[in-house]
Image (cartoon, rainbow, N blue to C red; front, side, top):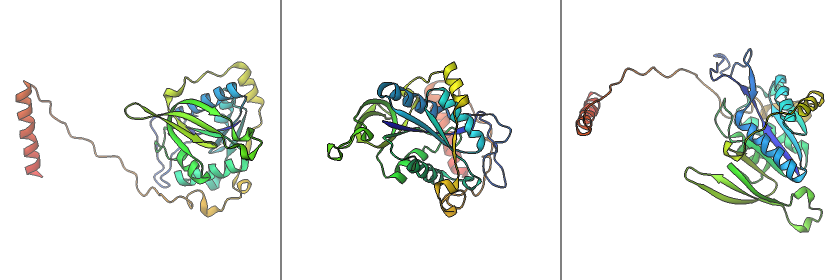
Length: 274
């Protein structure tokens, strides 16, 4: 079984600053970490590795410093890391990002399962995982809280007539969950309820330090410049601004009926004045 985990390096701080000229995140001088939701994806991949002897690969798209995120993933139990880094990828929206990652996954070759965190903490779009599945034309299940079963992996099926592998997962809903079965290869995005991420071991940290990280550029992936980066991004940030500060409100006190009457009167006055 071959498992690919897509991870992203994000700013550790919640005080994200935007470059007013490029409308992109300012990452210089800010400490970066692995996207918190991706930690659950890493842990689930390692658990599947321990259960099935799977080969695990972490892949990340970002600046050269994102190599540190891949080394951390290796310290946690991932087998190898691939960094997708090139100035040509700068400014990619979720479409261009998922296209680039999907192209890298095609270059990797045979895979059975792709695991992503449900969303990135800096963008909160939850679009890249499903976008990768769309570009690769494979099934996807989002917000997975548990993997119930996987049988057998397509890469282990020697007889093409023997059928494809499949998996059964629990997908979190607003109220409860639903059980979904899908064929493999497939992509899932996971939520924090799926597991408890482990800490890196000393042996893992030593292995991560000595592991060579593969780096692929635009030329390595043979991508058209018009399909990546800002040029390949259908969505553009036109303007960034802070929302107007809220004016002071009122706190209504008294009995329930009295407060309700006051609230209705205030709402009527607001409607009339507008």
